[in-house]
Length: 267
Ligand code: ADP
Image (cartoon, rainbow, N blue to C red; front, top):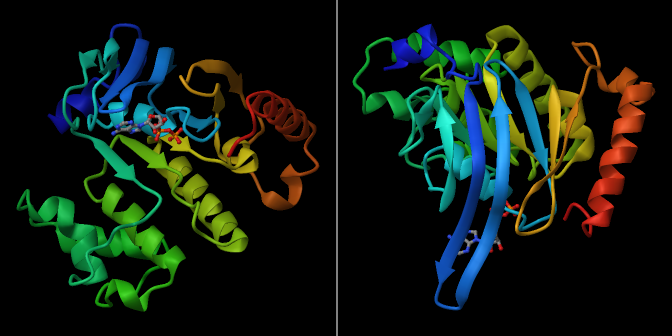
């Protein structure tokens, strides 16, 4: 299955992900909650797409639909031309909290997704990932011995252990302090540049969204619709020291802030 994903990464339209007319209504005891409405979005193989929008506008819902953890109630979401129903192979997900299992070592946590599959090459792979994310030597430690940033890096290793074609990230650095967050942004840029994975990143940070992405998708307040899909052409690798004085960065920051303020802000 993963082989098929690697050999034929695109659907008929040429996009890896195609979402058309997608909507989501949650039926609750208190009534219906319309979370998403009329979402049309294509994502090419290898693209890095950031999604920003006001709190509660349906960003996580959209990510869960892409991850196969939730369904659209109307429209459709496809990966490689096939409707997403259940978690597709070749997709790794990172949430805001790493949610490492406290009774397992860091290495065992990272290997968890493949322990079930019974593959044998896991130790080498886990060590490679741990060293790539600066966690070399921490494989035998337990989660409580790691800082928040290190735990989050371990969570990213776990999402990468099956070499997913697509990485879905829901506010993965939200709980980190500013400096650790910048370091993680650089790390993610490096991982993305060296692996050509498709990444969809939900973030509340406009600067993080622009810094990392090929495109920033700006959503309206609930029910979430796509307000703008903004290309970012700032050359890579990008650096925090220089991006602040980049004219495209400044312009995009201002435009996105204006759009979000008109929706009542990013939070
Ligand atoms: P965001 O990630 O942009 O903050 P969410 O996708 O988490 O937004 O939520 C969008 C809306 O859907 C919110 O109003 C939220 O309360 C509602 N919602 C999310 N998940 C559920 C659920 N499982 N049941 C009912 N309502 C939900």
